[in-house]
Image (cartoon, rainbow over all chains, first blue to last red; front, side):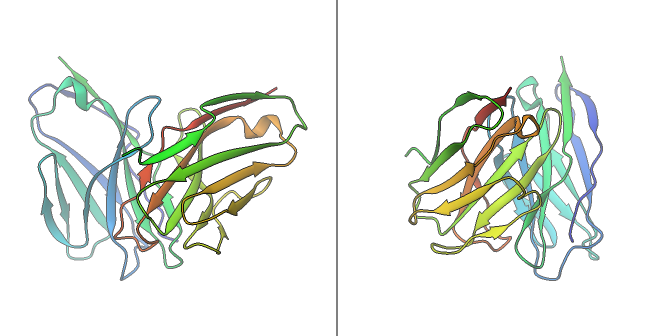
Length: 109
Length: 114
């Protein structure tokens, strides 16, 4: 089963670039890697998704190496409002989705 | 657009009581999901419905039942609530259950069982 491992927490300062890495050693051939953001008392919100190499949108970039056993979410120039929990999600062969434990990002002024 | 709507937002039950959590989506999605999130932890999949008329167990299905009432609605039932089921419950939907389809989440139902 394609479960994931992430750091429990990270600290950063406003204006810095933040990179959060997720390990998914058992990822299946057809699986995509998806990252979500969750604020307190809210449901998770989709940030970015990718299959291989690099994907970029207006809020983040996702880097995936050739072996796809890990991925890195990159948040450029974070602000206080980026303080949240970030989840890495990989679907397994039976299309059941397992969230990682999440990384609690704390952005300081 | 309302997206995914969950009712109720809060509920307190006594041990042994039953309850149904409701979820509806207005995005014409085929797949729907129920998760639970315990304090300080990630989301765990309880049940999901790949398409109307089908349901399947997730990681933690014991003590729960689900019904895919129609394409829009997916309910979660606790037949005999236990304190261990105190949690925040999230419903989600996606166009399909393939992993390249992002899930859209509701704001959760906070359930306390005394």
